[in-house]
Each structure stands twice: as structure tokens, then as C-alpha cells.
Image (cartoon, rainbow, N blue to C red):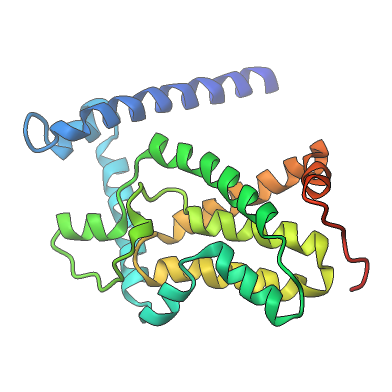
Length: 231
């Protein structure tokens, strides 16, 4: 029974994957040769109930974003993930392992970018524009890629987790900063809450892999960084 259930889940995932790929191919032709409704019904095979349900979820997330007060200065300050963590470390008298952080952010970002272009979800401000909804956000150069999952949330969380291994005495401050960076992307209206949630989950999975595979210790050794045993 478990085998059959797992097989059915794999088949469902495979079918969804194929449909998403087809929808991505069709996207440039929406409005010219295809309508949004055609893509949803004929390519994604969404039922009337599913279309209504998904529209409700999207609108709910948009309403949640609209309720967030924008702090443009804060958003722009937290837009640079590595720089934000370096400032926190410096404030606490620690010289940041910048080269190691750069590699970590670059490699984790590469994984997340592949997911972004696989799912190809429009940004909230793009959806809002298409649906004539006023969404007061912040224009950011870092919001040019697709929306799902959030790269800033993912990179901030994995950076906080790795740095917490080195500096356990700063664990709470590091995790708070990761949360601030993640939330700032919702404040800017460049990510849905669900983008942020999944970005964090992906980061935690990547971190667990690094620890369990021994790759994290190799990373520390490569850059000559040592764990602080004080907490």
C-alpha cells in the first residue's frame, strides 16, 4: 500500500511538472494566441473549483501584503544580505568570514534561482499591475527574477544557520536578522508570504544537507574558520 501510494505521488508530481513546463512555454503567447483561462483549464488542467480556490489564495496573499506598512529605508538597507550580516558581526566585535559567506550565498542562490525559473511565478507587483490592483511597494534591482521561492529569505536563513554554528553566542541575533531580511521582501511587495515561507524551508533543508554530508566542515576548513565554543 505504501509503495503504491508513493508511486501515485510521484506520478502526480511528474504530471504537474510537465504541465508547469508547458505553461512556461506558452507564457509569451498569453494574450496573443492564448488566454489565461485557456492555459489554466487546458494546460494546467485546473477545475473550476481549483481556479476559484487558487484565486482566493492569491488575493488573500495580496491583501496581506497591502496591509504591511512600507519602510523604504529599511527595505533598501536589508536588500544586501551579506552586507547586513557583516555589519551585525562587526557590531559584535567579530571579523566576518566574508569569502566563506560569499561562496555560501552564491551557491545557495544558484539552487534557489533554478527553482525560481522552474516555477516561474510572477512577482506580486506584476500580478497587481495585470489585475489593476494598487500595491504600494519598493522598486528593487534584486526583484527581476521570478518570485517563488524567495532568494533573500533562503540566503538569509542559511547564512544565519551557518554563522550560528561558528558564533553560537549570536544565534538569536543572527536568526532575528534573517527574519528581518525575509520580512522586508514582503514589505517591499516583491514576494508573497508563501515565497518567503518556502525560501526558508529550502534553506533549512540545504543546511541540514551541509551538516549531514560533512560539506559544512569542509567549508569551514577551506576558509580557515573555527567554531566559537562559547555561548
